[in-house]
Amino acid sequence: MARFLTDSHSAQRRWALLSVCLAALALPLSFSAGAVAVPVLAIQLASSPASLAWVTNAFMLGFGSLLLAAGGLADRYGRRRLFLLGSGGFALATMFVCLAPDLFWLDLARGLQGVGAAAALASGSA
Image (tube, rainbow, N blue to C red; front, side, top):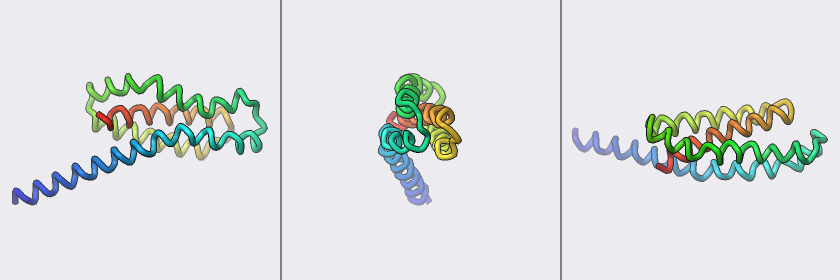
């Protein structure tokens, strides 16, 4: 019986490690995702370069400004809780990015993506 509990606990730890590693791999790729999409957005939306810059800036601003605060929140409220909240928020914001009707909502969703990425990365690496 003790071996079964140990194996179950070990498997749970492996799944947790895998999810944190996948998040640490996928979330930084979101930095460049906006920059890759900007040329297509410029053609389809006929927007100014200044407004298109916010596609990448919104993510970086949300991520960079809240990364340290997310680490403090992870220490205070629990790393697992903040990782799950950040990962879920990131996934939800990604859905909003895909469904954004115009550039304003896309920029807002990218900012929320940055917030979720900061929470997931700060608590996951801890």
